[in-house]
Amino acid sequence: MKFGILVSYVRFEEKKIFEALQARNIKFDKIYDNEIILDYQRDNTSYDLILDRSISHTRSLQCLKIFNDWGIKTVNNWKVANICGDKSLTTSVLVSKGIPMPHTMIAYSPESALKAIEEMDYPVVLKPAIGSWGRLISKVNDREAAEGLVEHKKTLGTYHHSSFYIQKYIDKPGRDIRVLVIGDKIATAIYRKSSHWLTNASRGATAEAFTVTSEIEELSLKAAEAVGGGILAVDILEDKDKYLVIEINYTPEFKLLHETTGVDIAGMMVDYAMEVAKK
Image (cartoon, rainbow, N blue to C red):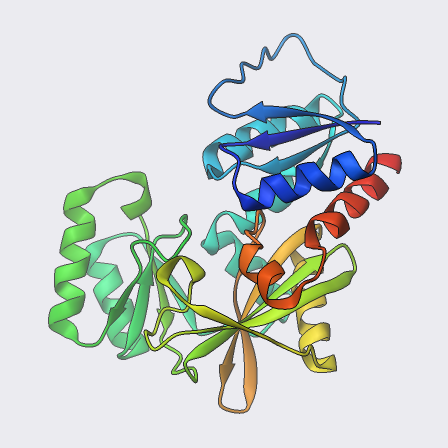
C-alpha cells in the first residue's frame, strides 16, 4: 500500500501523520502543492490513497478533483472539500438536512447586504464564504458599522468579497465545541475558550477536554454525514437551550485537540484512510 500526502508545508499535524504511517510500515510520498505539476492527459494512479493536508482551498479542490477523476481515492474526496470549503454551500446542505444552524443569509450587492442585515437585526456576523482561521470575520453591531464594512468589501473587490455571507450573532458562553469526526465515529472533542467573541485556536483560544454527550454525538455525526463524511471537524455553538452547527472543516488542524486530550488522532486518521483505500 502506498499513500501520498498533499501538503503545503509540514506542521505538527503532518509530522504526527508521517509518524503514524511509518509505525504501520506504509510507504508514502510528500506531495507539496507548490511543486506539483499535474498533466490532465497523463493520469498517475500509483497511489492507493492521497490524504489532503493542503492549507489552500483552491489547490485542494483542484488537485482532489483531478485525483478522483484519475480513480485515486482521497481523504477527503472532492465533493466533501467543495461543500465544506464554501460556507454558503455548507449552510445550504446542512439546512436542507435539518441540521440546526444560526439564521443565515447571503447577498450579492452592498444594497441587498444592508437590507438583509437590517432584516436580520443587530448584532450580526459578516464572513467571507471561503476562508479559515477566523480571518476577515466581523461582528456588526449597528448600521454605521454595517455600512463601513460593506463599503470596504465592495472596494476591495476580490473573490472573497464578491458575496456577503451574513449570520445572526450567537451570544455563546465564551466558548465553542469542536468535535473531530473520523468516518462514523467521534475521535475526540474540546471546548475552545476565549474572552474574545471569536474562539478560533488561531486567535489564541485555549482548550479544555469535552465529554461528548449523546446529543452532541448525534448532531456531529449527522452533520458530517450530511456533507459526505470523512475526516471532519464539526464546530458547534451553545445557544441557550440548544446546539447549533456553525461550520465544518475538511482539513482540520488537531494540535490543540491532541495536546488537550492525548488521543492518537493521527493514528486514527491513518487507520481510517487505510480502510478507505481497501474498499
